[in-house]
Amino acid sequence: MRKRWYVLVCMLLIATMVVTTVIAATNFRFTATSASLHIVGSATGLQNTGILGVDVLMNATLRGTVLCGTPGNNNSAPGQGPINVFLSSVTNIPQSAITSNGRGDFAIHLSDADLLSTLPPGPASGCPNGNWVTQFIPDTMNLMLRAQRRDDGTVIGSQSYSCVADHSQTPVRFDCH
View 1: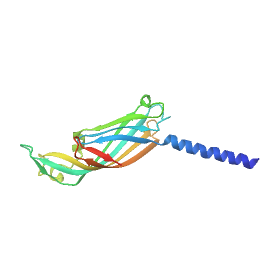
View 2: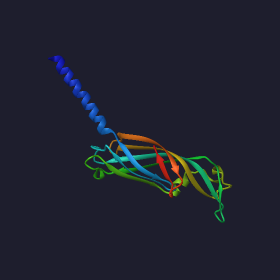
View 3: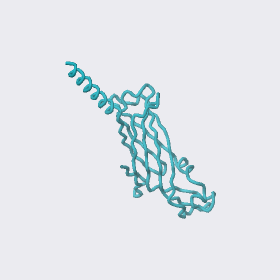
């Protein structure tokens, strides 16, 4: 009798751990475009995330080349390449925006100014001096998205993606896997 009780308790404990793991899993679906970096998507698995909702953190490393525009007429000339650009941002999914099935939509928008502020100044980007207008042309992006409870910082889930820029579209779109 005692052995059966022990087996039953162990089975319930294992079942509880499996259910907890499934509930804590987070999946992201998103679309990323460039010039400015726009990441729009949804996260699932956000049930029971607390009264303050969920923060979605984004860290991205973009690799590409810089075009240098002349100060007077803005004719473009190739600059230094490849160059890495590091970006990060946080957005909140309020609890009121999380559906009963645990889905919440998010959007992260970084402007051209945000992108360009991370480039090295003129000569370090391959432009003759700081008076030249720089434009960043991304080729690849490594992206990490992480969802965490806003109230206590507990990580709900994270995923990393490797992305390649599709320059045949305007704005440039990233194909991510």
